[in-house]
Image 1 (cartoon, rainbow, N blue to C red):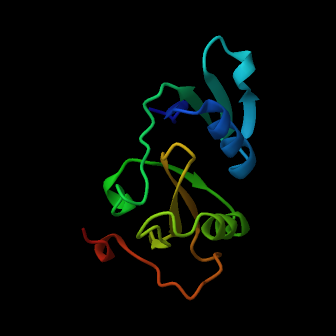
Image 2 (image 1 turned 90 degrees about the vertical axis):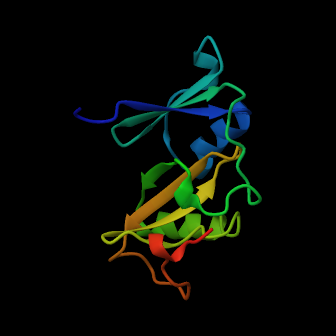
Length: 143
C-alpha cells in the first residue's frame, strides 16, 4: 500500500456534519452534498479524501458511552500548534480523558463531531503550547 486514498465517515445528519467539517475543521471542500446523487459530501485533508455519507449508522458516542478514547476507532488530523490549541479549547469537556495525550513525538486531543464520531487532532509536541493540564499516556487511562 502506498497511502490512504479516502475515508468514509457514517453520519446521521449530513448538513450538520458537512458544516462542522467545512467550518470547524476547515477541511478543503471537494464536492458539496448537492453535487452527489445521494447523501454525500467530500473533503480533502492533505492527500486524503474524507467523505461524509449519510447512512444513519453514525456511532453517536457521547460522554455517557465513551469512558476513554483509547478503546474506540477514530480519525486523526495533524494540525499546526495554534489550530491544535483552538480545538482543545473549543471541544474541552465533551467526555472524560480527552487529553492532551503524550504520543512521544506528538501530542493528541480527542473530540466528537455532531453525530458522535470520534476524532483526534495531533500536533508536534515540541511546538505545542504547554498548559497546566498534565499530558496523559496510554497507561494513565483506566476503565
